[in-house]
Length: 427
Image 1 (cartoon, one colour):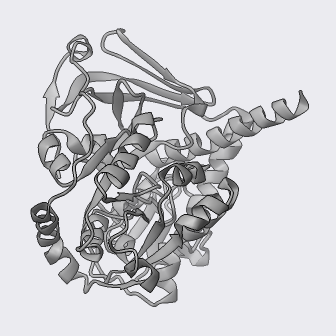
Image 2: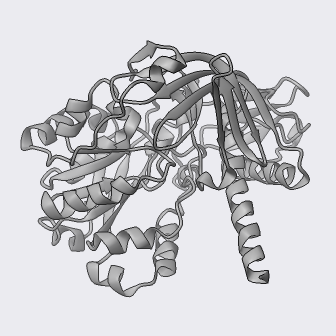
């Protein structure tokens, strides 16, 4: 899938009017059918099957908040199949509206800027639930999983649940990540996909439980591990390209500690610095040459990288300083290529400069709990997105692992919040 791109100067983009807010639309039966029809081939190819909790079936005509883990584009097709008899709106990224706003609104999509505080979103969700009488589908992770586990979730989601005042349904998919992991260059594997829809919280439980209790329930619902699922169930992935792009998550070599020197191709990941070769076997395990495998489980390797980033943040050595190509989003007509610039990320946050010195944007570490980082963003490249309600900046770096920036943003946010809490406790 591609996105409409237009080249403008930064000054020209600043003059563009921001899109006016529009209330969500109730998706009509035709568009619900269209989504199912378009996704039928994908679902058939995966031998898709699903289960629905009887408690969910009872609520078929009741507007609900539907949560779902986010692994691949097939997630939307899965939801359309499971809830074929239930009208629902979809909370989706605002860049999905570029060049096709009319269609996206017609199918019930509600735009929001990822990892940017958006007060209008809650009002739009309440409008859909109460005024339109539709359910609302939401992916609380906001981004696809990198390593097959949940992306960082926002805290205090219970406050949102209480304001919406509706039952909460959880849809958990299995096999979707294994079939189409984001790192694997958009190449699909032969893997069966299934899903289960369960009642996570009744309306009464949403009212009775504390925000902290709801966060714990949500964390438990998102405590999945796709690689562990593959290994436990003996799911064989025989494709010869299964390690293509693996350096996007396994960017640091555990044998020599070099960063940005690994390269995944075919069924192996090789470090150009020390020559170590790791093979990704058909069951999803990493096997190191020479008889030593530091991390056989890919999520363990990713967790180790997180700890390395955390140590760099604590000792002050963390820094990303890279030339980037900058696209900006101001409206839904296009994303605008404003040329090259420089992105710097340190313990003090992000700084983006460009447009011949006219652009100088800074973003503190506490701006958000996570970071919109993605691979193959609309087939353009790996991206780091920062910004605010007025403007989003999509930065495409060369030779910088965007996964590291995401890990650093998540850990930095937690560190700054802990420091603030400790300061307040001492006062």
